[in-house]
Image (cartoon, rainbow, N blue to C red):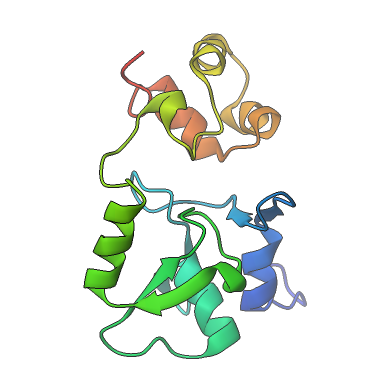
Length: 156
């Protein structure tokens, strides 16, 4: 970090990487994600934490032991504290089943997808830097990398 510059507070770092979707009220995380999931991650005091959990803790305090943070909106990348609740593992599994989210939809059939098959074809042909392409499609550069290497969207 440059000399004389104060680090951003955690809350500012978290919400600086969000896009608010007026129609749903979701605050979508645009930063890095955990593995193949849509759950965002952020560094906090040298540790990597899931952003929806960090958002919950910033607004409501510590997560009670044995409980997990669940999304009322069913959008894993959402960090809007009004969409987050705590529940048991069983409640989370029951919610997943009732919302028919237990099977992973691939590609443009996924409700969370920002890309389409047609866009993926264009991305794979695009010779620009991943960061430039990512800005055009409003996704993280790592998403572009995974598309190009067929780590994701490998079915097309």
